[in-house]
Length: 377
Image (cartoon, rainbow, N blue to C red; front, top):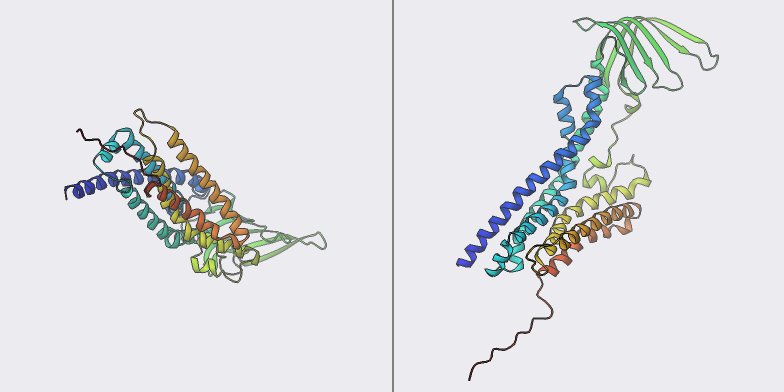
């Protein structure tokens, strides 16, 4: 009974260290990746005047995808670091001397790996597709709706691809004066539109600008002459009409598992194998949390004890992880080209964990021989 209570206390002691280290390392790496990736959207704030709240919301939707990628790796890093520190502080030696088996020592790490595996499944199957879908939708709205209302006085503003707007002044009631619209969305018929005044309106597909007392200048492709059409009122759609012909195309990153296994009809047939491989990759990759934790445990809990520690086993553990990560990329690429190789995704995710757990926990094949005790006559 005392041994069981002692073992539970040690489990809580090790698990607490693992959990706190995992939260710290994962949070730090996520913040670092978010900082580097968010630099791509600084231009929206600097050039288009988006608020800090919009910027944080837009970039914050990318965080779940970062966590899903790094969580298996941080699980390995934390298990390797904590157990190596326990070994360096002689705590593992004391625990072994107290009668704890390799399974008892590895139990907190396996519990942590199970939690991270469940978290990765929640991320891969629900949170990441939902957040990336919201990200793409929000980005689309910024491009087609919000940016049009951020036209600044005296500045040539690129509202969308091929559409630039300039205004001389804006009144408090929203009336625009001195408007120039350079419309090159139709590469075969570019046009320049001038108007004395106008107003931005909300249309069914996005913002529109109502132009009053102006002219439309366009080069006739057949004759090469400049055609000028004057008007009293004209409406120009400021939305990105190149992407408004139908519903927004579904991206592979925001598709759910059923959508990956049964892609929409507008997806090219040549991309079908890639979608199927992505579905099985999401289903199999969380198992790598268990595998990576098993690799760290195998190199931390096996081998001979060294008084001053050593670097061979940690380096071998890191090298094994690098090989596994490289194999993961290679397996994902070849499975996306040939779906007959999809089982390799499951093998890569689960087999290292099975092998390492067996080597760690299985009893030795050759039991050690002990000399029988001789009784004095």
